[in-house]
Image (cartoon, rainbow, N blue to C red; front, side, top):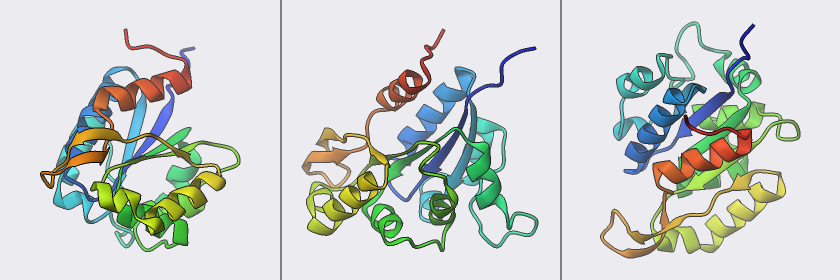
Length: 186
């Protein structure tokens, strides 16, 4: 009997860097991982449900009120072996730290068993937003709860400025996940 593939819940919040998340999701699926996605309404302004569903062949959890999906936040939180929020925007990071659960990512975070399974955040935002004391405090609070905060890249940002706050490149995200599971891409 074949081993069950590792299950990754890939969460997206509203950033132009959602396109990088799509590349990472594609690489993970190609590597044999089972990937499901959840997206905030803002994320779907950058990439659509059809893109995420096409990459994973699974429906996207993007609407708390869709008929027949009222328990998706519980079901997906139990199903996944690892949750990765990438991109993690300042808005979503600060909302998670405040315990707000009025979008799919927030409900999943509160339903997640942090003591049993890893939840990672790959931040993506303007340098000033990344360095803002409220964002720093939220990242520290989440790390204190056991969330792994991945580093950001440094370079050209979508706003035209240069600095830290870039989402890691897709290959870097994938390599972090592969290392976590002790696997390699064939």
